[in-house]
Length: 128
Image (cartoon, helix red, strand yellow):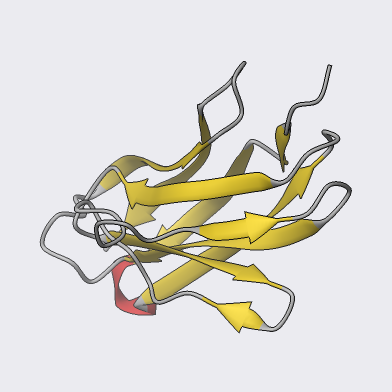
C-alpha cells in the first residue's frame, strides 16, 4: 500500500534547568518520510505564544510559525525516503513562561493517513 509515513525523532526533549534570562532556546527534531509516497506537510503549530516552530527541507526553511500555525494553503513536500528538520524555539523571556516546570509542544499536520497529526514535546525547569 502506497502511503506517506511521518516519523519524528526524538519525540521529546528535556532542556533541564534553564534561566528566564537565557532568552531563546531551541531544539531540532528530525522529520522523515519513511513511506513510499510523498509526504505533504500542511501545517505546523505550537502550543503557546512563547513557542515557535520552523521546518527546513533541503535548502528551504519556512518562517517560524506560532499558535496560529502556517498560512492557509501553505504546504511543503518531503519525498519518499526524504527528511527535514523541525526546530522548536522557546522564548524564555516571554510573559507566558512561568517559573517552574515548562512543557511545550509543536504539532505537525500532514497527509499521513495513519497519523495525520504528530507532535514533539520539550520540557524544562525554569528558574529566575
